[in-house]
Length: 297
Image 1 (cartoon, rainbow, N blue to C red):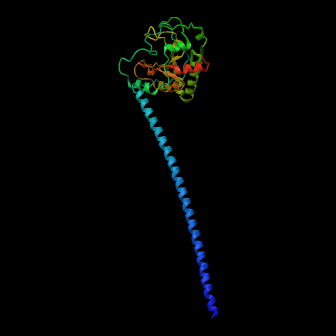
Image 2 (image 1 turned 60 degrees about the vertical axis):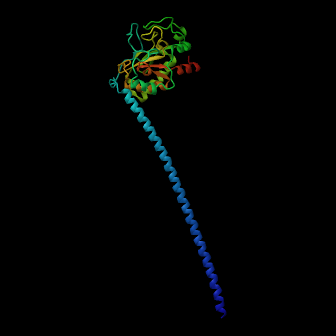
Image 3 (image 1 turned 135 degrees about the vertical axis):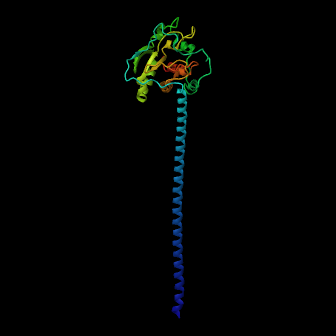
């Protein structure tokens, strides 16, 4: 009888212990499950964040490609009125920049004065809006302020500089495939342009020639405006021996490429003149003033 009385409490005690153990096991399992769920959620959130970043990068890349496509369409429009440039010759003799006396007065030149007689072509509009950003064509007053008067009198024929200070800042130098007389800082800048062009666009580099650089004279057709060629800060370029036609509203493909290189060096492209002159490049006013500030002039 006493034994039966003892067994009952023992069974109850064992039941309590088993229940406690079961509770502990269940609690542990639940905590483990919660932890695993949290880890899965964190991993999921990280994966979503990575996907979001990747999507942003792709969207930025797509936007860049669309911008490149728009620029290419502009270039195609710019070149639509012009046949491709002639094939590049493998070799050509160096050309000295020279505009001899008695040169054809119909040759193109920078234009300060003349307004277009007809509406601008699409090519001219694109040149005016896309190129020469932050670059100003120097007026005669600016050139005289910075460099002085090249000489006392001018004609439409090339003449020598008589200003001794300006003459001392001029130099004749072989730059890439051409030999040219220009202002020394302009020659340094031209060397940088052609060095980058040779590395990145070797076919265009090989094709480059000149139709003139330093030449102290009036602008063609003017008796008052002095050409910026007079200060040795302007250059006219040819491609494969071909001169881009003046004021035809189109331009050689290689000159469009060159415009980007010259713009990066602070040169102004003549395609944006009132009378389009795509072969003409000249040092911008901002660049000239920077050279003065740096002690180069």
